[in-house]
Length: 269
Ligand SMILES: NC(=O)c1ccc[n+]([C@@H]2O[C@H](COP(=O)([O-])OP(=O)(O)OC[C@H]3O[C@@H](n4cnc5c(N)ncnc54)[C@H](OP(=O)(O)O)[C@@H]3O)[C@@H](O)[C@H]2O)c1
Image 1: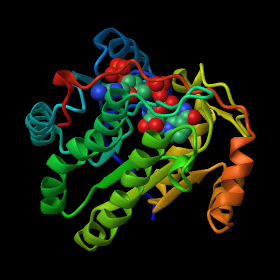
Image 2 (image 1 turned 120 degrees about the vertical axis):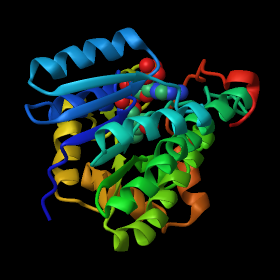
Image 3 (image 1 turned 180 degrees about the vertical axis):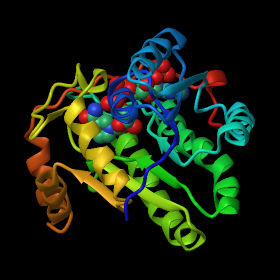
């Protein structure tokens, strides 16, 4: 299978992985719709993609805003019929050394963005894509979804949820002509994990991540997990006795800053 999407929607396109994937697809004959909240940073990415020959639209949207996402994405899809939707926007949060519990507001924001943000991106487009009998939905999870990490419970939980969500969608949508791809990155050098203090085994650049993601998406892969070795290691670890793995993980020095992001209104969408 070789896919060649002409109209692509990317959330979280103003930074990191979303930005480099947008640039990787930018070429004449392609329309990119870039979503994020920071209009200035989105505009800068749009200009870079346009300079490579793509037609580019930006939409300043908060993926946690279900109503706004539904309305705007339906409007945009009616105009440009998305062939590929990349639900990528996400935030990280976690525990500092010695901290017992995550701030409940930070937890809700991480789940609001990483889980509900993905639902708010994908849900409005399922019916139109199925009606056309074609298209591709790609969801960015993480290798952190495979086995819970003691230092980032909410992040791991949110990524595990979208991992299973994408798995479930695939079985239901592919018989209707819509390809579903699950993306599980390991460590990628982006602003998200700049302040993360931890060993980052097999970390790669955002440019390399974008090349791997684009190749996987073009081939319609069900799972795009990289680096492979880290993904297989995480899978293997999940079969080991849980308390043994906990003991080893607890010996590692990891310091994850709490996200300053908060849910608008303090409640989940
Ligand atoms: N970097 C890694 O090592 C790594 C590893 C595994 C998985 N991932 C996943 O990859 C995805 C991209 O992460 P990244 O490393 O590229 O992070 P990043 O550089 O911090 O970019 C995150 C993007 O998400 C957008 N975003 C955040 N909250 C949003 C909201 N409420 N509404 C709309 N857009 C929002 C941000 O844009 P605005 O601030 O403009 O809204 C930004 O464009 C995330 O889902 C992350 O969990 C990353």
